[in-house]
Length: 329
Image (cartoon, rainbow, N blue to C red):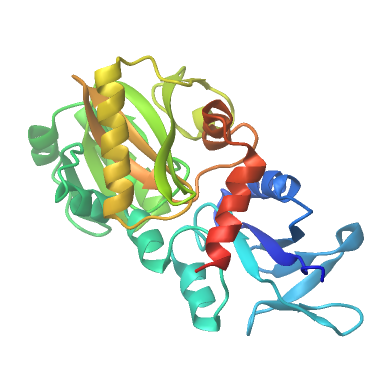
């Protein structure tokens, strides 16, 4: 008897400006999944349309009642598992996960709660502080609140980072060196989100740490040192190559072990699953957490695939492991 292959939909796109990167990530996963084990399909979710990409790039609308597709022969196509590689909303903040849970659709990565929590920088850092994971000193502001620049500078010093609380891909972030620039920076951040964080500046090395659960074990795929040619690791540096990425990071063994331990602890204490990439600043050997991404970039130029290759796990195995976990949920 021949086992029928499982149908895997690689779900890419999203509602934010990050959809461009997501389409590249989706393509890599689509190309990498083992065709001996799976029938692989492309599904694109954008603000104004959800569609399955058929032969000759023909679009078939997704039926949102059960996430199925009706093909030309009127046969419904249902997917055994969705490989979620949407960066930003709705695939990285829990919205899609909650919908899939409601209709009984299996999917890769972490659950609704972990996605929603980690997309909120302030709440993630608050939860992780209970597990002894340090972060920068910060002030949280909601749109419409009075902003007292004197108090902020007195509390946090200068320079500070101003960032949207919930937003991917470093959009809306400013580094502020002068008190006079602070108000303008908050306005830029408020364009991206109704809540913002102002964080004290940590003067140290930035590292990006890939953590996954692979074959039943939480492993650190790699620690990548980010050497920005810009002031900091902003959108341009992240996606347009204005930074140098060095894997493994140039740190001593004691620091490396500390970073690995804290990264795993963060992953496990949040009950994470699937791909994750956490950003830290190392200052005096101590890793301070900035944020955790639960659906990090996975295009060929992205950090996580590079770390996997360096670690010795093929992209095919890495992606296959995610599919098998989702099928066994």
